Image (cartoon, rainbow, N blue to C red; front, top):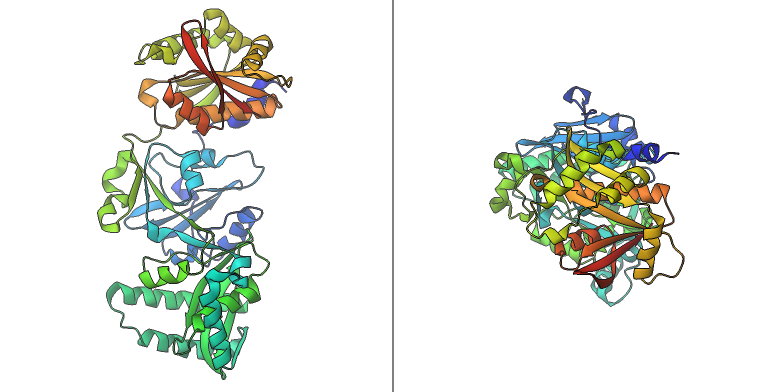
Length: 498
């Protein structure tokens, strides 16, 4: 396989934009599609659960391309996309899938992984109320150790004081559920938006009951002396994560919630690794209750909005939402193509590198190739270029000069015989810095080396006080090995084994 053909799978295409006409309203037919895309993944969030999350959106749409599943919905006055789901082995990355959306696309329900690995050039917001509580199922069920002492006591009191049964939902339970729900609502003084939300939930729960009777969800009914005392509804997602999305109980029975939560998990989720009990909606009592079960971690969620359209963005209301601004950049990330450069690109590349080096405050932070070195890299190595249209905006190279690679191994003190290649030529146009272009290009070069040259060690040589470059390389997985003087310069050598 030639280097060029081996690289083609990394190309970022801007010609496959997803049109509005390709989207269809959320509906029952989305359920098997979600299962197809989620099976085999390890995601523990609830955002892609049809019942726990998606059906709450009355103005939601999806688009299934066969390789990528896009979800979007109108909320808080704007259109927001879920991070796209990509089928394993389809040759498309999440980054490429997201790049097919309009340049002003806004994202919600983003995990830290999606934010840090895929996107720059966005206003990034999060809020504590949005975080989902993720528990180790084994801990939640065992309740072992001193920290769960209070929970065990609550359960013991319930089992001692009441004669109870817990059974799987049956058709004949429905009248009792209706009466139980009505009594629960009447006991609370809802008004305004809270009343609307409760009514919406009641409608959703009716659908969950029907789904549970079809075997699509699990639902258990708790009774005390034959009288309904609680109900819990959940599911096991195609990723193997358990989600409990509904739990209500009659608090006149002491310890009823602790008993219901524990028994429901033990009966249904013992084979799962994690249980997702969703967010706390900012309700202090609910937050305290969820924290008392000691979550393994909180799955934080983020909103991404391009800086260019900040004036109308959801996160602009941060002062009212008490949302936390994580990163604020002046311009949205550019959409660009990545191509492999060749010998005929010599003049354009040399001119680009010299011109951009001239704009650096410290010229020692980039020592350009000599003409012979650049011709060698373009002819015998692999240099990638990022393009906005036909304009070259960034470069990165893997120099396959084995003789120089051996010198790098010697400098780094590596006597294992590993093949070293220089990771070099990292330059971004001044007006494109800080927009995620260089990081993407470097990841593509690393992926190329892993695909075509593995096993080997990539070695980057950086001026010792060039903090931005050192930090960027470390974020890509490089480790500083040694710092040594060379003539009038002092270089730090960083390596990454692939």
